[in-house]
Image (cartoon, rainbow, N blue to C red; front, top):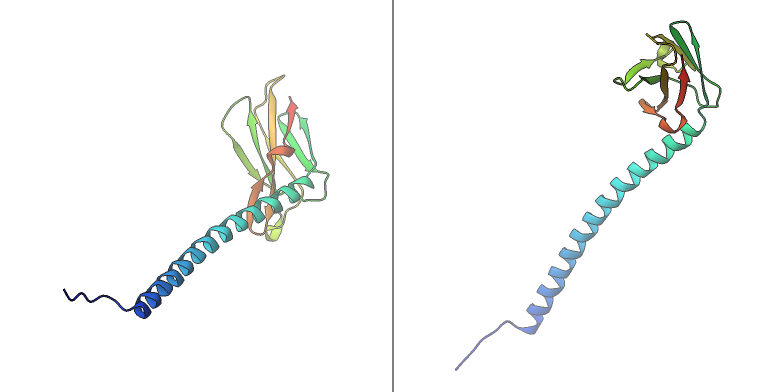
Length: 139
């Protein structure tokens, strides 16, 4: 019997070629995976740091409550909940889309009712909620 096979040189070149191609594919996959994760983490860290500079104060006056920011990060608005109702939004952008640091809104607030206020800030062009800095006020 006369069997012919692949020469050892060609087999070695093919193995090295397959190894290089698989290595490049794995490298590209891992790189894309880590870039997406790092981008998301960077945004979360930035919002956490900026939210740390928010110090919200809320005062109820009649049927209106006034929200101000006493911290280093300007307040761009707020969201509020009244006794488990749906979330309401109130953005207090000043002229030119700049955050002016305060806002007010009229609410139907019964005596003893609790309103939870969640401050909103702007990071780049995105509005970001700061739930850790939320405050509650009683009517």
